[in-house]
Amino acid sequence: MNIIGKLFMLFISASLINNIVFMRFLALCPFVGMSTQIETSIGMGAAVTFVMVMASVVTFFIYYYILVPLNLLFLRTIAFILVIAVLVQLVEMVIKRFLSGLYKAMGIYLPLITTNCAILGVTLLNINYGHNLIEAIVYSLGVSLGFTIALILLASIRDRLSYSDIPEFWKGYPIVFISAGLLALIFLGFQGLAH
Figure 1 (tube, rainbow, N blue to C red):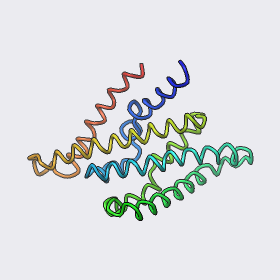
Figure 2 (tube, rainbow, N blue to C red; figure 1 turned 135 degrees about the vertical axis):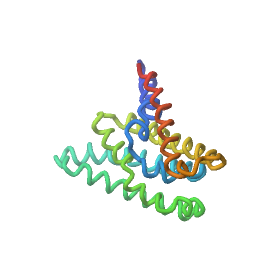
Figure 3 (cartoon, rainbow, N blue to C red; figure 1 turned 90 degrees about the vertical axis):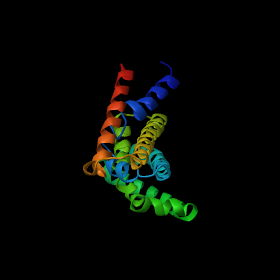
């Protein structure tokens, strides 16, 4: 298979087949918390995409050009968290200045991108899988697209459910988690693409 084909399969695998939310159960807090409206889901997806891709690029260089040569591999997690925190602060400043409505809608979830385990997980997975820089970027884009798709799908379902007649004991988080579980089953069906 040629390079483009391998990158395409990596992208599809990261976004659909091994979706970070439904298959690895990472980023569940923003998944449930930010899926109340489609607009905020798109904004959160864009913010996570930027931070995830940039974090993957920066941590790639930090790992291979600083930590490995200096034999400081034990600092990997701390260094990666610091990179993510700096990038989240940058995103927060930009959104606050240029998209104040989105900033207010995202609330506490915007600074919590720092603690989004999916971003740290992807940076660590890129190293563990031995991805080169291009593969790390493609993998990060695929994972963040998969996260954004999951957010938008759940936000669409929650919007539709708000107009439905749901029994009182199912309202709120119970129906959200049932919907998320059904979405996970749909994404599990993409596992057949891998074979």
